[in-house]
Image 1 (tube, rainbow, N blue to C red):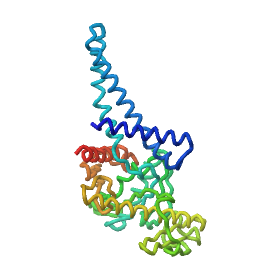
Image 2 (image 1 turned 180 degrees about the vertical axis):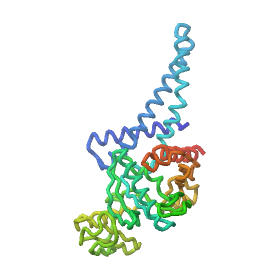
Image 3 (image 1 turned 90 degrees about the horizontal axis):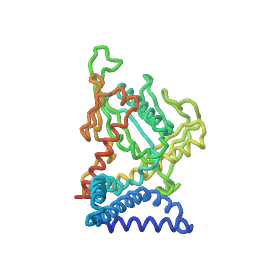
Image 4 (image 1 turned 120 degrees about the horizontal axis):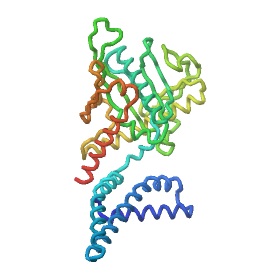
Length: 349
């Protein structure tokens, strides 16, 4: 179990922040973020330490003949409750990904499989749209380039809501589908794939961009299909010269396009920084689920058997229609639990 002196140290820090905020001192925004992060942890600590105090008091009463029976009952009750409280406290003390509470940018593109891969990329887009709806998140398509058959060549979407990245980050990687394409007359099962990247949305303080590092082009939107294509003469393309990253946005408003494209660019640059930090950490410890390796095949959707398999944790569910319909919570909860178990093992190892 976590030593009591560490728990006391966390509580003292929380109380210091609380006092600073009450006095209006320091960086209020930074203090507010730290206060919000520590509040739940401190509530867990106080409940746990109070139970330890109650146990000590109950055990002291065991020597009193008149109180012995009551003390035995209370001691047994507290001891039965403590393991669950300790487990809950350990989870609360796990290192937090500071990006977990952020909105996310989702990108999806077809991989191997031609038209069928593009159609599958479209299916994934709709799956995530429905999942966002069930959680009350706002799902906004920023850029969509569709094929003539209704598939997706490329899509970029913003997902806004509470704790979006914490749940969506496990979706990054290669998604594979096995099914009979509508265009297949012989009834043969094809395997194709689409890639998904989920990036935590950057805040202004995360990334500073030098204007001289940017090339901004205004152009007429063109190409087959897509929600925004052929609706504007003011599409914006921004090239970040040092990295070669290119971002486009083709909403109707040129001013809005520039704003959207800059936000996506900052998010991608912030993601590069996070990936660099992750790679450095991975040199000294094993990479965990949710590392964001977009070349990793993470999941297979087998339509003939109605089966979805997540290869990272060996999870197989026979409810493919529901999953593709946006019912992803069981999968994501299992991935979160696995990631927490890995962190717990590292913390206790």
